Structures are given as structure tokens and as C-alpha cells.
Image (cartoon, rainbow, N blue to C red; front, side, top):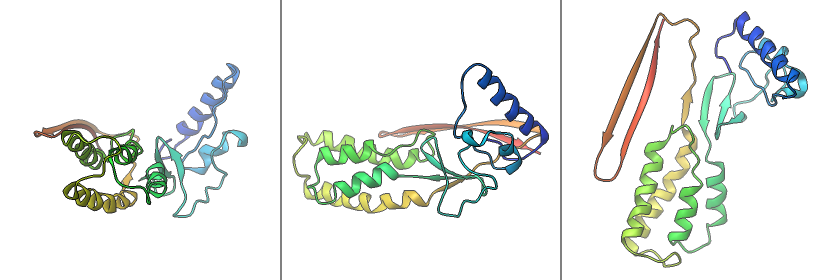
Length: 194
């Protein structure tokens, strides 16, 4: 929840849990990167135990990502997509299969939007070929798809640092956008300066 620990985090956490409980709402699966913040949360409401003992292959699932509290990093998880790929490995490649795989790429924060856009553009091209759902792909498209399919495994190698500064001296808002004939993108960043 917070990257840097201070007394306010612990007090806010305790106050929040009390406020919710008095109204009959129970916050569950609470997680924090600092053990003392977790100590004020009732054990039955925690996502993990104190002390935090996660090895490098484990993490907390949140917002479709894996969060490593100790390293303060998000790991892009393509879990459902990999499951789909395994299920469909022996199936003939057609528009139905590709649509199913593309739909399984879950990126609610847009951290891998450039990757997702490539797959969605490919799906658009399938529609331009006017293929039925069960039609085999022409060899040109099949070769491109197989190349894209092999690169999909690299999505799990993407990590994003999570950092929240407690008292920045300056905050800047940066906005970027770009487009071409096939896609457009935009993003906003808050830059905290100490």
C-alpha cells in the first residue's frame, strides 16, 4: 500500500480498518511492504504473514499483476493467457483461437499496452481477410502469428518499479501521445522530485 514506512501509515491503516469494521465491512487480503504496517491489521485480514517471507518467484496478485512487496516491483503476469495457449496448442490456428488468446491478455493498468496493441492490430488484419471463425490462416498470416506467439512468453519478463515518495518538493505532470494509421496511444506520468 505504501512504499516508505512512517507512523502515519500505521495509524491510517489501523484507523481505516476500525472505520470499516464498525460499519460491518471487513477489509480482507491487506498487504503492505513494511511489516509494522501489517502488525496493526488483524491476522485474518492479511494477505500474508508478518514477517514478509516471499521468495523471488512468489508475489501478491493485485490488479491483474503480481506485486513483490519486498522489492516494490510489479511483475506482468500472463497467467490466463498462458493457460489459453497451453489449451490451444494442438488446435488448428484460426480467427477463433487467436481472438481467444488476445482476449486473455489482461492489462488493466495499461503497462503493456504497446504489446497488446500489436496483437489487436493483427486481429484487425484477420477481419480484413474476411476469414470465418474456423478458417485456417493463410501461410503469410500463419507465419506472422507463430512469430508473435513465440514472443508472447517474454511478457512475463517485464517488471515495473513501484515507488511512492512521501514528501516531494515538486510534482510535475507529463503527458505523451502518438498515433499512426493503425493505433494511437497516450499516457500521463506524475513526476515526484525530492
